[in-house]
Image (tube, rainbow, N blue to C red; front, side, top):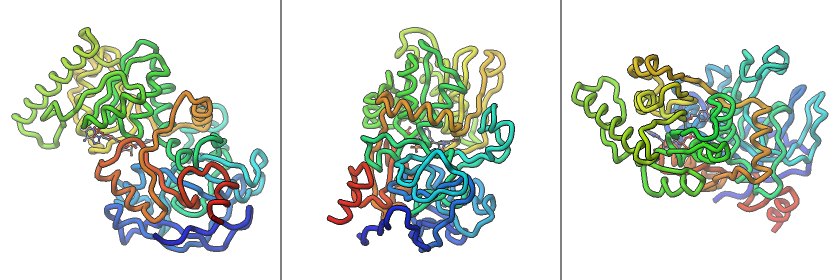
Length: 408
Ligand SMILES: NC(=O)c1ccc[n+]([C@@H]2O[C@H](COP(=O)([O-])OP(=O)(O)OC[C@H]3O[C@@H](n4cnc5c(N)ncnc54)[C@H](OP(=O)(O)O)[C@@H]3O)[C@@H](O)[C@H]2O)c1
């Protein structure tokens, strides 16, 4: 265990900061790709804010960034370094020119949508349609795994006061993504059935809660009894263990035998869903992010006129499925990506109101940021993971308490 990071006086910006940095020459698994370095502290430009990071959330995009796959993010940012991290809680430390809605000392959580703020999409339509839309901490170089980060002022959200830094840092990316997928893209209606892949994972655990809040029924797919219990404790109505359906996962270049076994496993899962629902009905909405291995099952199982909403592809992004099931039964595939600022504010308000609960299952120290990513990479986790950055221990909720803990 190394010493705690040093927190300067409010508003004082040191020229150098500590950061976990990814570089091209060490692309690979998280334990290889993430390394600590001293970096120049970034300067907030017009409309931007420098934030002292108290805690940072762990997301799958840090793994993609470190792997250098499916794209090298350094080729996108045109930098020779990348500081990952698309979730954070912290304190506004310095304002860039023109920022008036926030002040130094404000306690915030950050959403990760970066846009130009000037085009038609940003001003009246949907900033997610902005041609310059990017994910902060993935497609931008200064994410949250560092003492300071620089963000657009529109990325700031009020931190729920009662939440510790680490809990406040844990939910934004996955929760806001799940919110847009179900509320604004798939438009889930009361009484509908939502099939949720990875129901105990980062996205899935919030999908379970949102589905409940919308008055719909959820069926969560998980891979162990512990994961089923976690999903149920966050409002998932029914669960299925995917290990009870051997051969279900699509494999590229599958043999005829494998294809037959997959068809049988898919039908078996369909019947299990009928039994859970007590009627011969499939899901009205499928919450997809697994991709290649699950997508043909999702298309097959979904009801007539259903929606399959997808935001990711953990198991592979080339999707193969029998399109007859799609057109004959008039199903729709809906792409979805993170959320715009207005959706993030709406969703964050539900956390302030206690209607949606963050699901932090493990907190790692600043020293263990690579290790936390490795746990996620190996699918050994449930819920969400966060790492302390400037916060010296868990449970601290504001700057005063944090300073006292650092002094003590
Ligand atoms: N576009 C966006 O804005 C956006 C935002 C957030 C995340 N994503 C993407 O969405 C994906 C999931 O993110 P996350 O944070 O929820 O990850 P996560 O916490 O790792 O959860 C994913 C869950 O998927 C399940 N899973 C993994 N491999 C599977 C497979 N081969 N077949 C079936 N289920 C499988 C696992 O649950 P079980 O083992 O219990 O089944 C796991 O808990 C990632 O690829 C991420 O990059 C995209």
